[in-house]
Image 1 (cartoon, rainbow over the protein chains, first blue to last red):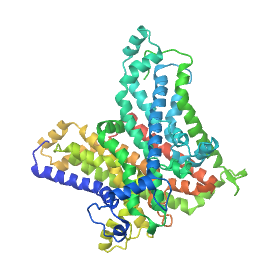
Image 2: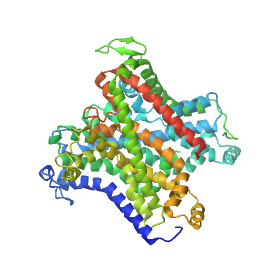
Image 3: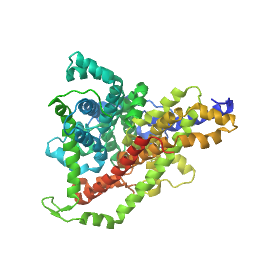
Image 4: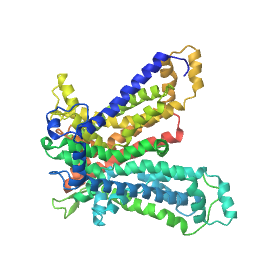
Length: 282
Length: 293
């Protein structure tokens, strides 16, 4: 601080506390709603404190399904979300690592063509090519499969750019030394580059896991069976039935479960998360 | 930038780029080219034949008042979300950057909404603003507003803007905080010695020096509103009431749904591609230069 302003500091705390309340309150209320019975919520009697129905509501959505709206259990949806998020995150990292390795450490014809082809995928988010992509996945027979849920999202220009940028900062001497020691390209990759990239990989993983978990449009298009739904699209179907019939306590319990894994990842790995976020966006 | 030392191998590099290229060709370039191609065709009602119609789909699109309506909706949505989430995030970041205690705790408590899926955030906000039982709906009613976002287009728009802003503050906060920390303290001190008060220092030194971050965030936020809010809109309003919250991307999704108007949907996709290309180019130009003031 340049000058000591006790009053200014108090004001800063005040502003931040209000900010935190605004951010936290909606989710807190969702949690409160997930611990009450339908009657209390329907009558608008919901207070600020959790109620006694926590175990009942959560075990109902997890193991009995959400009743008249969908037959799928939320535990199946959580499993589907987890599997596809893991495949998307690891897949993106794996193929981006090797393709940027090729682009940085090899000289071959069409090297720059390959680079630009990968780079330009930034210009084609799923949202601008919705139906043609759906058609390909359908033609390949990948509807309602984990492959269909994840593989089309695995190409990654940002991850490739990030690794390329990182590899450029690795000193040339390391490669020269490795060559003198007669290490081949695969050996160099495995024993030198991979260990050096550990932090970058971890930071990227945090971001990509969240990205995969939170996919909406793609799973909505390519899953037709209830048991292949991810939790993010499953939750909408709980609310989408006639509004008056929505069982809000179950919808809110599902919302809490749907956000818990990615939020935990951010909170627990905050340093990596911030690093990943700032670096992938550069 | 090139490496001085490289490997020479005839097959390995191709093998290494093959998986990435295969996926981009099959799931990016081929569908994108199909979208472009099909935007010049019209399919019959059964999807069995399609006829080349030239620019007919585009002509229909630009004669469609709903398309311009949807552009307007997207513009209003983008401006509202970008302005509100950037201002709130900047206010919070400036306070957190004052060197007060508990900065990390505040950061943790402010950043986690980044991890909440837009659709999930949307569902929570519908619940809070649900006309008959929502907590905030009661408050708004108590203020004398006839609150019903299911019937009132402006209120529906307000609701999606609130949900989108709530989710986006965390992202903007982190980038503003990083930007603020990069400003040399000596500049601020020099201004303080010259007698500049905090408010004046903020507007004449800090804010101009933050302009690259701000500019970058404006672009990112516009992209966010265009593309990432589809789930939010689908969960909260379904584009309604009476298309009051139908953004451009949501319209592509709706029009092509269940094999509806595929030609029209693809023509819209092509226009969106042009928009993304422009936005991404702006974003990367910024990265090249870094400094814009």
